[in-house]
Length: 276
Image (cartoon, rainbow, N blue to C red):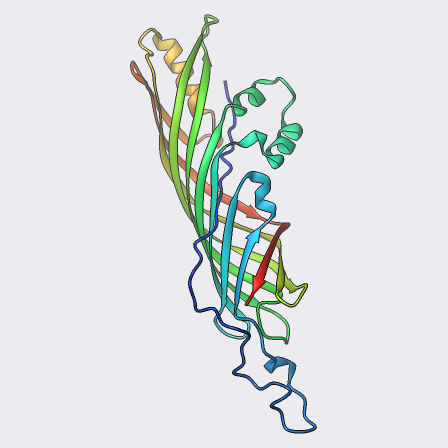
């Protein structure tokens, strides 16, 4: 058997304390300018701090916050933390939509994925350069970011023996990933202090490692059954010739090492925030 299981990771909140400040008043304002002169757009005051949350990630049961701080008039740094409680991935709004597209009702992949529960968290560090003449974190931007994430899995795998019997293997595992990437988007003020951040396209790449085990009595399985179970577990993540999971079947259960690319896409995301 060969099944593909996509581990949908997650991400964001660790509010970085950086002295809340009002809009930058160190630059000249129109009231301070000499009579008959107007303040340059480039020198207008701006908010240095933004707290925001990603609304689109809620579709995958991910919740978090990001703190962004201006380092110069058009360059910012941010730190975000995202948390996902233990969740049936296919029962989230986005997960249900994806399963409707890629799996037919009642098929084996759908039934197996419905049992998968995941939890995790992630920390993201990002630097952005904004375009436009006006200072502050607004306008179109290009950014680079690094991400560290950890995940836990709970997957009661139902192994169908060749003789027609069933053996439940309660797989539990964890993995950690680290990677970096780029992001393009636009951030705009829609009210005096309300910010909307739109991720246009981006993504990251890195490495993920971890371990999993399913402790149960497998002493009654013969060599052929064990080989079949090993192939099934390793086939949960199919990377072509190289399996992302290397499993070992013993009398007391299954143990596996996880080595996967840490891939992620950021696109068409919607974040809202408060500037101060």
